[in-house]
Structure formats: C-alpha cells, structure tokens
Image 1 (tube, rainbow, N blue to C red):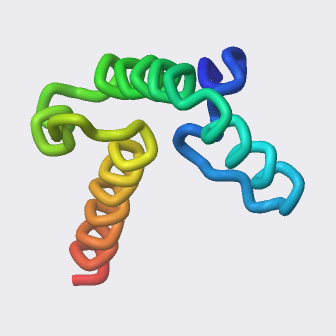
Image 2 (cartoon, rainbow, N blue to C red; image 1 turned 135 degrees about the vertical axis):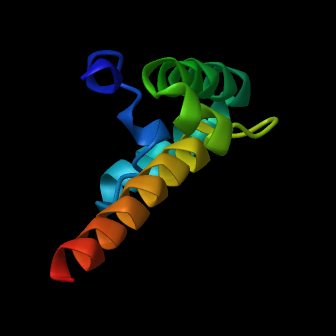
Amino acid sequence: VQARVHDVLDHIIIPTEAQEKASYEKIKVDDPALWKRLDVVVLQWIYAIVSTDILTSILIDDDSAKNAWKSVVALFQDNKNSRAMYLNK
C-alpha cells in the first residue's frame, strides 16, 4: 500500500506494459539521483517491515529495492514448497 501511495511500486515491480516501461526507464535515466533516493526509501521500508530473521538473510550492502524484494519473495516461495512437501508426507 505504501509503495502505491508514494508512487514507487515500480522500484520493486518493473512495469510490463510497453508505455509504462518506457516511462519507467526514462525517469530512471533522466534523474538518477532522485531514482536512487526513492529506491533507498523503498529499501528502508522493506527492511523496516520484515522480521529480523528475514532481514539478516536479505541484507546486502548497496542493494536495490527490487533485489531485496526478490530475495523476500524467494524466501517465501522456498517455504511454500517446503510446506507443500511436508503436507504430502
């Protein structure tokens, strides 16, 4: 919700529609300092909402919000597969 409110969702989920993707790339190139600052805001938000265990497993120096988000998603996907295997036993 916060990412939508502040219009920074594209920092974690890159647009797939051609026009939106072109706009995303243009903003990123036209003002890289603003882009980096907003990316760090989103990264800080991700770090603030996850548990300490998850934080320690995704924390990387000079990471981007997109990469941190992908790491969180991967952790939950791994857990989902493990739980499914456990339930099938």
